[in-house]
Length: 270
Image (cartoon, rainbow, N blue to C red; front, side):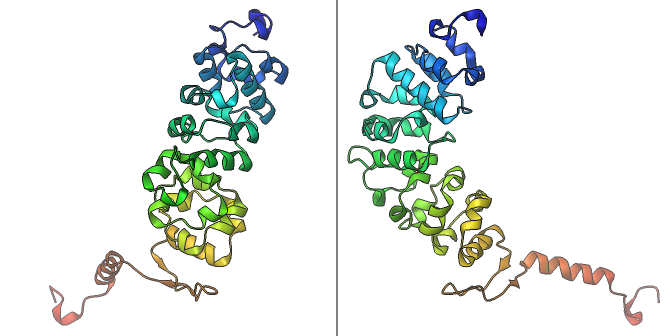
């Protein structure tokens, strides 16, 4: 990158060519970037390997270059920022235009954002604005599909009130991003039992470790539906009982017929 001279002098045609090499720039160098064109912002916004300090530096560079405050960012700029959104302070996120952010969330929600728990909470707060998606209790499956990973930022009280229709819209990626403590506190065994196989398979080791025995049993019942575990959800599992499918029983009977010796009176050729 030395052939292009000082980072502060990088032209708008050079910046989009940096790609993943941009993470090799120091925080000071990133702060000096001129990001006046959306294609430059988008090129850096597509990079996911930033450190937290680098994210903050690039976010500030965008504001300085465009001469905008956080509240002035429109949906197009927010979409272009991509991963850089997590470089905003919580106070800056709170000042985002809720309507503009709700327009951008369909794209941002598909990224594996590295935002902190506090940042995710603030982003979800924007979506509850009356001119965005409104109260979380009114969100249907379609809204949860649209917001993608941001569902991981639902506050405890909202997560504990989720119904089947809403849970069905939560992406496996969002499930994996729910902080372990929140997962344990907010999602009860009945809600976990509503998970799809893909959602249950997305549960991380850290999340699983935080669960109670009853929650773990509910999760296991989703992951291994061929096992029938009678469970007393007031306390603990009542044990493990295997329930074979009709196909398994038929195959088992066929195997017995093949291996059992034929009685002499009816065997052919006797």
